[in-house]
Each structure stands twice: as C-alpha cells, then as structure tokens.
Image 1 (cartoon, rainbow, N blue to C red):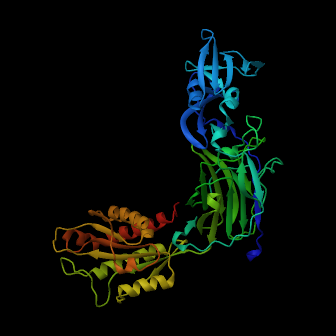
Image 2 (cartoon, rainbow, N blue to C red; image 1 turned 90 degrees about the vertical axis):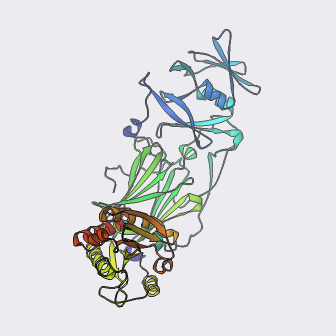
Image 3 (cartoon, rainbow, N blue to C red; image 1 turned 30 degrees about the vertical axis):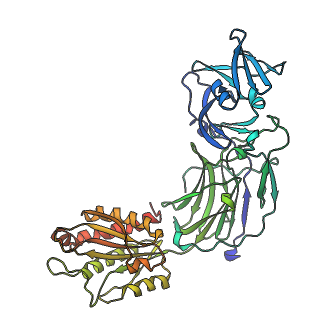
Length: 511
C-alpha cells in the first residue's frame, strides 16, 4: 500500500431532491401546482408526457390508448370506461370514486383538467394496463414499465465480486486531470432498506411474482443509479446499477477532474439532499475531496468531482458491461516529442528567395519547446535542437522507444506553382485524427493563411509512430506571401502558441 494510503469505499445511500433541482422542472402555465413530466416507457424516453399535481402523476386519454387501453364515454359522457382485454375501470370526471370490475372504492385522487383535456391518475389504471410506474420529481420524469414486455426489474440479486485485475495502462488515451464549485453536504448514512452495499456487485434483476403498484418501482430501476465510489491508491472505481457512458473533462484554477454520468441518477433520501461528498485522507498526495450531485435533470446527469491538490493525468476505462467505470491516475506529466523536420545535409523545401525549410522548422519548434517548459503537465522532448539530421524512420523509432504521449512533426511545404499557398495537417492512424483536427484549426487561424484541410497520408513519421502523431505543413515556401509569414518571428510565435494551445485543448488542460 503505497504512501500509507488506505482504501476508501463508500456506498451511496438514499439521497433526496433539493429545491434548486425542483425549480428547474417545466411548469404549466395554467396551474402553479402542475408540473410537466417527461415520460419513459420500458426505459426509453418517449414524446409523451404526464402531469404532476401534489405528488401524483396524471395521464391523458391519448397516453392510455398508447399504453394499450381503450377509453370510451358512457352514460351520455358523464362517465368514462377504460378497458384492456376483459378488465375495466370506470370513473366520473372530477369525482374520486373508481369502479374496478364492478366494485367501487373511494380514492384520495380525482381526475383533473389541464389545457382543456381530462387527465386520469396513473395509479387508477396501472394494473389495468399491466404497468408499474415511478413518478420521480428528482428528474422531472415518470417511468412506466410494461409487465408483459419483461422490460425492467425491481428486485436485485447480488453476490460478492470476484477480484479484478488492475487495469492495463492506456497511454494513448491518457488524459490530464487538472473541482466544480458549490458546497455539498456530507454523505448521508446508507438507508437500511437500500439494496446496494459496499463491495457488492449486481448480478441480475427480475420482476417479482404478481403485479400492480403493491411492488413500487425504485429510482434505480428507472435510470441507472450511482451505487458506490471506491478510491484505492491510484484507482477510483465508480459503480452504477445499470450501464452508463461516463464523460470526463478537466479544469484548472483550481485543479479538478469532472466525471459526468449521463442518463443516470441518485436515490432520493429523506433529508432533502441530492448531493454529497466522500472524505479523503488528508495525506493523500493529490486528491483532497470527492463530491457528487444530480447536476442536471434533462438529461438526468450525475456529476462526480475530484478536487485535486495539483494537476495529474488519468485514464478512463469502462467495465462490467458499462456498470463500472475505472479511473486510473498517472502521476507524471505528458511527454510531447517535437520534431523539427529535416536538418543537416537535408534542407527540406527551398523558399522563393532561397531560404531553407529546416530553419523555419527549428525556429518554430524551439518556440514550442520554450512555451511547453512553462506547463506543469507537459514535458517537451526535442528530436533536434541544432542543425543535425535524423532519418524519418529513426525519428519514428525514437518516439516509440522513448514512449512519448504525442508526436508533432513541424514542416513547411513546396509546390511547382508559386500561387499555391496555405496550411495542411496530416495524420495516418485513427488515434491521431482528433489531435490533427484541433491543431489544424488553431494553426490556420494563427498563420492567417489558406486552409488546405486535414489529410490522411502515409508519411513515415506519422505512420510508424504508435502514439497520436501529426505532421504539420505550416505553409508553402514557394509562395512569396507564405514565405514572408513563416520567416516572421511574430508569426512563428503565434504558430508556436497555437501548437501549445492545441496540445492543452487535446488534453483538456484549460484554465
């Protein structure tokens, strides 16, 4: 156990909605107490909607029909009959007496009118339609599950997880972690009725025998729910009750890693909180706190924030069919190899006035090096600092042998026609396209020359390198205007700054 750190594992108990989340639910203009609810059926979002009033969900006749029922007015329109198969529910608009199969009973609810339409309490017709539902004010949604579709579970079977091997390093996607402001309340104690516990892996979920609302649906059945967060040395594990697709980005000043879980939620609790924090040992070398909250309601998004004492890199891996996200921290800066093309006996392109490409390349590369040396999370590695020559194959081999994270080869172009001008950016391997696209846009803007697009080509230095690699053709030295710009130190500085900003953008090292 390195650095004397202890393993931290916390299961998230029930979390309740906070007033700020509720205030974002869309309101109907005709009644202050009515809220429009999004509707999910069998786990899929629909274009249908429901209305919430005083905590109850109401649906229209049209929605009842879409769920398989029929609605007919009877007794000259004073009553309504809802049928599915041989089952029937009868009621009178505006009254609270409901008849199920000929037997009448009083209800605490009655139909309501919204926008000129009659709406029926969903709990009156759920068993008739063969559905269960959850009215969730936390996300402003109602989740409907059709029993005959075998759609979603409400019971959880668990077993102790088998030991998992440590995730393999993924330097090609290593992302820097340079917190989300807002105070958060302490993590509430786990609800004794909550089914997920520390160190438990969800194996299967099945509907219980029987039907109807006597077995209420939980939020974790409607949307994947945040279940546990575990920090063990350099590995953070996030467990959810269903498949999620984590998204990460980093912020600086202060440094923090943000992990979003779209289409996910947290269990509501009775204490009025929808957020919490997890204590981290004070002597942890780079993490000061871990926080989580329901950040957004449309789409429902759980946000986890790792407050950092200093920038650090990480790799993200999704396992267990999307129910587990593993964040592996890598406590070292990114290495970027800067290749000033040509050199020595190889001058590269010769300009309209007889100047050499190798000199432009080295001038820009040196300025990039100076800027990168000011960055805490990026370490420049120069292939040449003087007028020496290394073959393209040797350059690619040096990058692979050194194990750098990025490779940037700087060049200038030539053409038979003096009218050809502009910037081109080349890549070969698929893992390089995003870097090429970012860098190209920034350099075109900095060089203020024509945009000749991002292109795929089998240049040795970008074909043979294993890390994300790009080859930059900053401009055409055979064009008098491009030549003038590329030998202008101010323009060289702007291009160098664009290259550095592109690297930071690629790694999300943004202030």
